[in-house]
Image 1 (tube, rainbow, N blue to C red):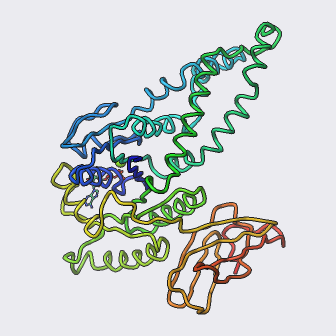
Image 2 (cartoon, protein in one colour):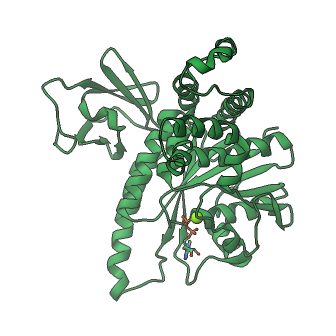
Length: 401
Ligand SMILES: Nc1ncnc2c1ncn2[C@@H]1O[C@H](COP(=O)(O)OP(=O)(O)O)[C@@H](O)[C@H]1O
Ligand SMILES: [Mg+2]
């Protein structure tokens, strides 16, 4: 059986590392051979677990291993030959060697290589659960669109095929770029294969899911909503969201009363943005979450009603298809009766009201020029039809309802 793979992402500082470590400890306590690995270059897993972790799996408890993946090592492993060739090509064209070195590593590639460790752990058969503490959302997301990226690399950076090059090599003196060696091709070939395999792992919704960590702060929630939209769009399963650092009931009066009211309001936004995905919460503790005891306290709060290792929600929550200039957004809204449907689009934000239910969705940037035309219920889901608005370009911040 494929190991259970859970990726945690969210804005910096919201509690990704803490929640990932807490999840891993719970999985291990439940008898799963568990590895928790961090691919965020700002590693803090060692501090969180109070165990010095290396770049390869390091034991840090019963059935528990931790790993802080070193992007540079992964880069050297996967990319050395290619970087050498690209560097040579650039320096021959007059780029100074330092800049050439920078240019041979496209942004994001190092984190992508770090994520390839997921595939290595799948292949090894050593683990039942793989918990990943990812980099903040922006970077991670771009990487997840990589089936296209892999193809792009093949087509754009590598416009020639091996045979053609083999034929051209004797004449390479006549062409003004150095010919890539077999080692370069081997690197690229292996990389693309690995990426394709990893993509299959990440899209396997029976075993892999992503969990969004956030705080009850407006900006943080909005960013998580954007991420959620893109995850759905790319077909990656979000099986839970974790709202961390909620002021507990005991926090009364004075100074914090206002905060509690604001947080309660923001929890409403969370519900309207992520339902029906389960919303897990953890309180703002009276101290930092560091070490086994605090991690287990956090784990007990987050997973008070559910199994940390389970796939907590099985379906994608938004589906967007475009055809012939119109786009259809499909939102499963449970128990929706034939109530009045109210749609409002402001910039990229779409607010849907059906009876007493409300959904708030941040649309992908490409939808800026679309305007909602109709909404209907079909097969237990609300379908919103959008048309391209061709009355001239609209600014994204202009009200469009
Ligand atoms: N629920 C909580 N209550 C109190 N402190 C927390 C809580 N969750 C996380 N922390 C603390 O907040 C800081 C940031 O958490 P961390 O998990 O490192 O966030 P991220 O990985 O998203 O940057 C850490 O010092 C951590 O101990
Ligand atoms: Mg972190």
